[in-house]
Amino acid sequence: MGAHLITGAGSGIGAVVAERLAERGEQLWLLARDAKRGAELRARFPGSRTLVGNLADPAKLSWALGQQELPIELDSILHIAGVVQLGEIGDLPVKGWQEQLNVNLVAPAELTRLLLPSIRQARGHVLFVNSGAGLRADATWGAYAASKFGLRALADALRAEEHGHGVRVTSVYPGRTATAMQVKVHQQEGKEYDPSRWIAPESVVTAILTALDLPRDAEITEITVRPGG
Image (cartoon, rainbow, N blue to C red; front, side, top):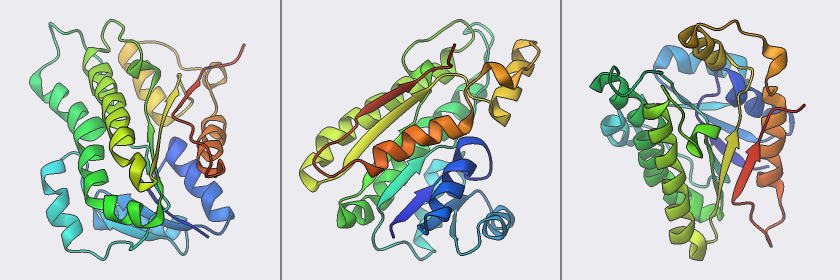
């Protein structure tokens, strides 16, 4: 039985991966933005443990986690939480940039830094759920894509730095996935939402677990997942 810290376990891909790992008898550590959310997650995933920290304010994560008991060993950190706000470069204000960069990039970097000793102890795995926008930036997606391009750079640098410690690092690039975030994206785009057109969260989770379960003699560095025909 391994121990896994998951961000974004409240919905979408994060919720499905938490369910799948719980079914296998793994120990879950779930990051919650506040104590109320933590209680909700523990009720949903009996036997799980929670850490409280707000990804929107990464400068306070060190203090917040310093007040709580952290896992001695972590077999994986699964960075799944994210936010998106569309807008053209000429229109999107600084607040929109800062929120996406904080949640999607700076917070994963800081959380990884704080928990890296636990990951090294277990020779564990750091997995980033990135996005197709981390490989290509389209109109109105500039800020979100910038945060995801940065997340790719973070993963690549971390992989090079931690290889000698036996730490594996994977980036997963899903295309549009049928989650609550995708509903919000369609609202921002002014488009009708049809979940049947997009990837099921369960399919992305299958890719995630494939990377985690790979024998130790190999490492999946990147996985791109696209909607089927």
